[in-house]
Amino acid sequence: MYAFFVALRSTPKAYKNINYLFSKKTYTLLLTKPKMTFDEVYEEWSKEKFPTVSESNIKGYKASYKTCGILYNRVFKDLKLADLQQVIDTCGKNYPTLKKIKILFNQLYEFALKNDICNKDYSTFVEITQYKDLNPNKHTRTKFTKEEVAKVWTMKEDNTIRLSSCCSIMAHVSLNFLI
Image (cartoon, rainbow, N blue to C red; front, side, top):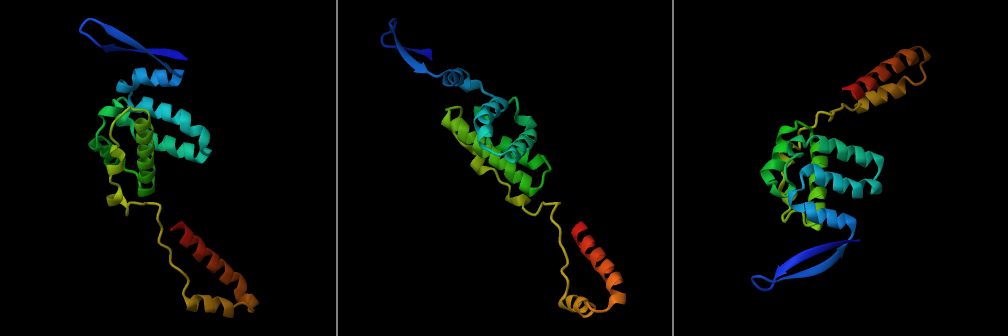
């Protein structure tokens, strides 16, 4: 345990020392809180969060963090909504990735508020809905019509057509998955 002394002025020349006991982690956070950067908050948060989540989630958080490069050296408590929104607006990522970045912001602000690193959670005001249609991985697939399915079933017994039809169907299905 570390002793943390706070001087309270009771008279103009007299000071009163009050001894508080804190854990090493709390003591370190208390001393550095006012000037903790985005990067430092992320590091402290990840030490707590990563042991409790899957490797897949950790990779997602790390990927989201990498998009926030313009915030790394900024003092966390001085960040405003415009700074967070700038990351979203300029990163060029698709909607699912933007959701992960916003989740990271939410969790960092929750950690920062809990540890008195900042006073307000700007992450709740970050807007990503205008990017909802931005998903380059989204594919539109054409389904088989009822007539095409019926045609396949009628060819079921014909051995001469079976091989060529199977190849044709497999090519059609494969192309639908590639598109």
